[in-house]
Image 1 (cartoon, rainbow, N blue to C red):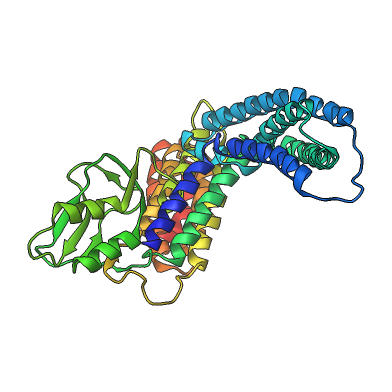
Image 2 (image 1 turned 180 degrees about the vertical axis):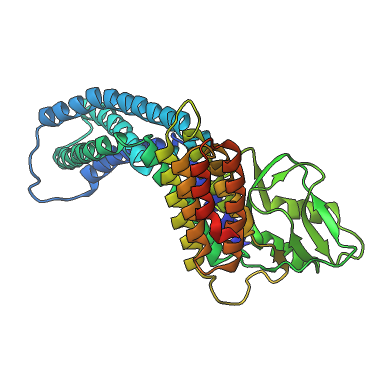
Length: 420
């Protein structure tokens, strides 16, 4: 039960991170509580000889804050929207959640809105004579802290907003998201379960009843259901799988009288299905997004092979992270749940197929791609090497069809000789 609660709480926090209203709402509540704290301390805190702060000085500061912060917040919102549009138009629409989840921009916007609310509430309370000497002193200290926080945040935010939505920044955020998903997956490739060995004939499927992508799997829920009903559960739909009614989410073995609707409902509830894929827990989606960024850069309308070359370098770092990160040792946490592993050949295909196709007529992209695949083949992972060689042969076939100069084809054939 605790595991299911933790999983749902984590999913809620991830969802709130992409909601622009969440942090501003929290900042507004903190602002109101700050003014309330000054009022409470005014009557409860017995300070000897408290500093005398005139109400007029505090009123001036609060008036400046209330009149200026709303304008700055509107300006911040406009700058953020422009950055989001730039990221979607010049990179990939799938990269939008990464830009939207930028903590610095969200924090800045939240502080600006919170400062505005603090100024308005504090001004109303002050003009209604709600504070004595101690209360005015506390409110003055809070106002000074808010002013300092606004100035520091604004300086930091201007530096960030100048980069937010730019191609390089979006590529970097996509790489970080994919690297995090790869590292998390490699540490626990079976998600706490056991390897999928295939259930015996006669095992029963539990099919999806919704349309969408699997975004997360509650392994604790599957283990608890399997234990209570004396089942063995095999996961057949990993995060990223597109589900339709009739496609199996899991298969179960051990149900002598069949799977009741209650048990099937419990198993289905362990799968969170959404209309869009998410980066967390779905390494293949990150590879697709990076590949889309490179593919869009290679389109005739953009014609930016440098971005595609930059993406191939980032993909090398991601696959190096795959090789370096080893699974954590220990007994499986969910021994009644069998989980298949992600195929490295699928990851390589997701990462490089679009680049090989769209960059087939560009010698600089083809050269870098061959060198990249050669690097992956030499990392010491045989499965990765096999997938890289297969992708090199495919890339060479694309190049032979699209390149006009025979000398360039000969050069690529020489670079692809490692795949023979």
